[in-house]
Length: 122
Image (cartoon, rainbow, N blue to C red; front, side):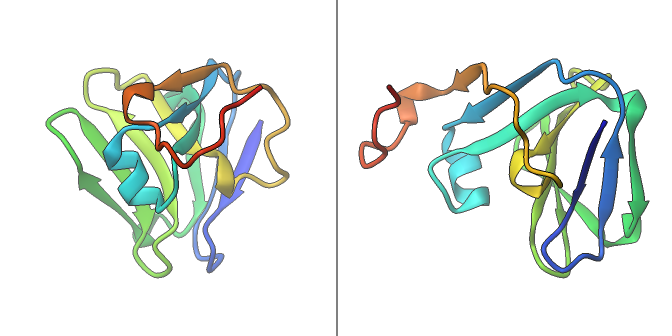
């Protein structure tokens, strides 16, 4: 089971069930939303995902015709990404997990827009 929260602590969530995969996404939308080289997510089943507190503080932004990005409207923490094409899955932001995510990140997405200033992984 995964637990996470936003920066201000107003939102907390849990995700039960296995992590299907974890990824670093280098698409320019993830870069802009995270303010970083990538958006890093654990992909889990949406049936086991629940906001434990602060669901009313979560806003979703439709960043594309198939992607929705959930964030805390108080502190701006990126919490989730979900595809309207795959409603049985939701991706939770690795940086919001408590304790920190300690499993391997197995996928790198949109490497064609990976920033040149980011060091290569060994």
